[in-house]
Image (cartoon, rainbow, N blue to C red):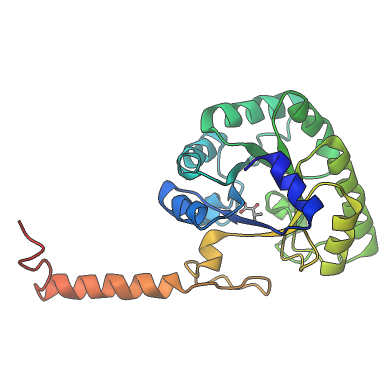
Length: 262
Ligand code: KIV
């Protein structure tokens, strides 16, 4: 998979399926199932590291996780999130970190949160050969500014700004844009207004594709059930049952059996 093919999928009217992944084993399964794009999201900060926010994860931690996903990806395009603090300070630092992520992790592209304010950095990254995916709407790295994870761009002014930002990201050369947790009608309007594919999460069905956090959609993260999330499996329950059965078998000495011994 290439960024050019992802763009072509929009032209062909073919929906794009994206999921997060953070390790070799699960990424191998997701890739074998035929996913178009694997996102090593900075949601790893929550899902893998147990932090409340995405803010603490570092560039080196993202690179460590992305290397495993890249080794697993036979088909999918691998996108790595640029973590908080790695692109906000200056254009030069943003480009240096984007190059570091691409070089050291082996990923195909980076994702970066924000609109107009980061367009110069995005232009520079693309100019030096780093494919970039934008991210607008609910941008979790700005949680302290937003004061929570609520629906974004409900009001006209914020919706207008989001549409404006999306057009700028498109013009700057982003190969795709993620729209997170915004009204479906606005997401559809943005999707029609830009030439690059728009991938939604909590943004309705009018986008060019969808992305979900793998652990959420597999039912591994049992406490988290926002309206936009569908559980496609209940692996959390299955794991607990399997582990319970294992504990019982160890305690009653039925595991390992003679056949399971050398
Ligand atoms: O970090 C992440 O997992 C993301 C998705 C929610 C789009 O950015």
